[in-house]
Length: 207
Image (cartoon, rainbow, N blue to C red; front, side, top):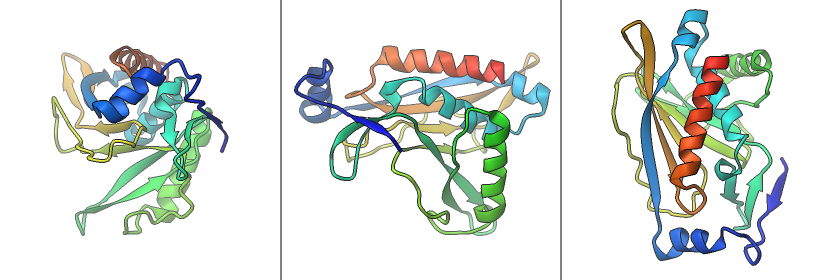
């Protein structure tokens, strides 16, 4: 795990960061519909494919890799790891797993499959040990085709993005699903989020 420490005395975003972290603590979310027709036509597994595309895109932009370390040091991680929910039907509970990222989709899928086999059936909040600190979170609610999704976080020093995936639908020969992206305004403006979502769609088309 590598990171760059942010020197807030010289950081060109400090004025905006301080405003949205302390003066007016502010997170926001945006929900968009993503075209996953390519995934469906190729028969790719939806959840790991989305995790792969999200992680690949997160790792392209520093606004989505900002975080406070456990000692409160502000850093930009050089890469991020996906932490994602797994639903247990019998108990109607969920667990958080994480999977080591690789830019090679086949390798990532292999890592994901191995984690599912070893830890996917285990209940508890985080059954896979040694979750790294450089994570971002993803959840999926495949029972709802939502148009908006808001997560309320009273602690405003959580800077990492949070993504929620909804139910996919087919219309006019195209498969789409909703994705809610929640970010902290201290590190991510609307421009950055829109650029991220555009790139994410490109990555989904390219899989």
